[in-house]
Image (cartoon, rainbow over all chains, first blue to last red; front, side, top):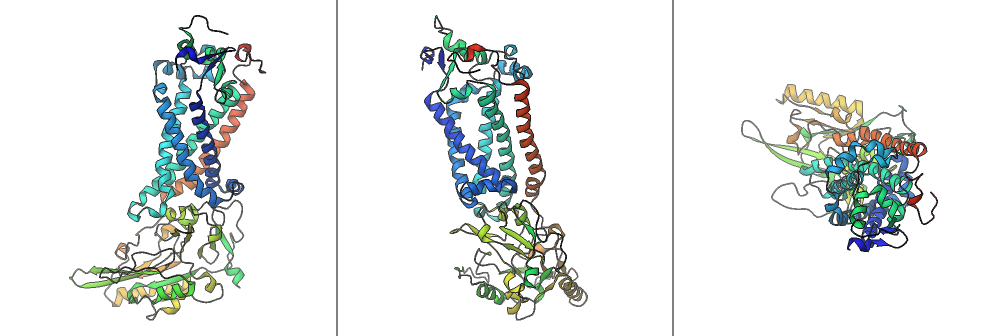
Amino acid sequence: MSPSEQIIPHGHVLRYTLKERLTHWVAAGAYIYLLMTGLAFWSPWLFWVAVILGGAPLSRMLHPWAGLIFFAAVWNMYVMWAPQMKHTDVDKKWWKAVRYYSTNQDDKMPPAGRYNAGQKFLFWGFFWSAVALLASGVVLWFPERIPWNLRSLRYISVIVHPAAALFTIGLFLIHIYMGVFAERGAFGSVIRGDVSIAFAKRYHPGWYKEIVGDSSTPRK
Amino acid sequence: MSQEILRIQKISGHAGTVPGEDTQREYKVSKLIDTTTCIGCKACEVACMEWNDLPFGETVFNNTYQTMPETRWNYWNLILFNEHEREDGTLMWLMRKNQCMHCAEPGCLAACPADGAIVQYTNGIVDFQQANCIGCGYCITGCPFDIPKMNPKTNRVFKCTLCTDRVSEGLEPACIKSCPTGCLHFGSKDDMKFLAEGRAKQLRDHSNFPNAGVYDPPGVGGTGVIYVLHDATRPELYGGLPKDPRIPWTVKLWKGPLKWLGNVAMVGGLIGLFVHYLRFGPKDRKDEDIHPGGEKS
């Protein structure tokens, strides 16, 4: 898609293509199921969650399959977005100014591209966690098939899996907070695909320049 | 009587108190296996299958007595045959009846996330409740003795019950009944320890086994199955009996500090974000341009 095609009527600009949105929601759906069933196995206090999802044996059976779907979606994101997620000099400055970002003083932030440094961190955090969760998850899927002399694989997996999951829960909470509550317009963008030009200009000035810079009159 | 013996003192994956916690009415039961008088007749294996009504599985033959390499989900009691060469070059059989050790601090129970799938009665017996089992196999990882085995058809894990049904009626486990040499004993843990120590002393003093001793590993809080070994300093010779069995440290880390830390972080994170929203609110509060479509801002 050429930059000018991304500008759509009524002062809006396309931020996420249909493919990107679908991938996001496949990952989101799978993740939420994984989160709920995973938390049920994590703590006896939350075991009831598995009960309302159809019983813990069913949760145990489907959790690994949901994991495969999640990983496939994350892998697709990697293929689509990895080039855009490279750490740049602007990102270094962004992290130095992150206190302004977290206190809503966005005018003091260095100009972010399509993704700011925080979003890149989220992406790579989820990507590497997904790799760790897949590797440890395969072992936990078939613990009885791991021979006794390779039992250290199981011992590593039982600690890597919850640790990586907890890390993604931290990322997930921030992601939901930013996308749904803090940055209005963000949630709509991953459903309908577009954001207002003002949104693009304000939060992703670098990206805004990229798509509008060469067209003569950006419609507002 | 049976109700008291079956009072539960530990429950896997359980939120809240346990009915039999802190009660001390019952003595701990224990099985004593004297490996020095075992002749490897496998009568205990047959008695186990008979009493527990387990279907027979295929055996293998590779020119040894070991016609089954390890315990199975439907084969809970197995004698491990080990040919040991003594220092003077002579052969010695080290035969060990292998089954669940009924640890005082069971790794299977610690690792299990399913409410009530693994219980420990106040008499010390560790028992799997297949109706509550979810088939995750964490018990397999938690066990330092490689005992829990999964039925691949039902995804439920099984192991020796120490014949809980018989013990609760005042009977001995089936294996004990069948032993022709009297190398198996059953009774209170104190009595069995006394008997075992006496036998070990006899072996040391009169039978030229200076290293004879009792296997009751403290790393898992002691076990409900104890062995008399000719050489207690080298339990590995007896088909890989671990010298110092413990619940894997990663299981302990996961169920201990990580769980604590994770819960604090998750709850703290939720509260933190909520407070952040109350303090700072959404980013575009003052910017009318963000929603030119007329959405409320």
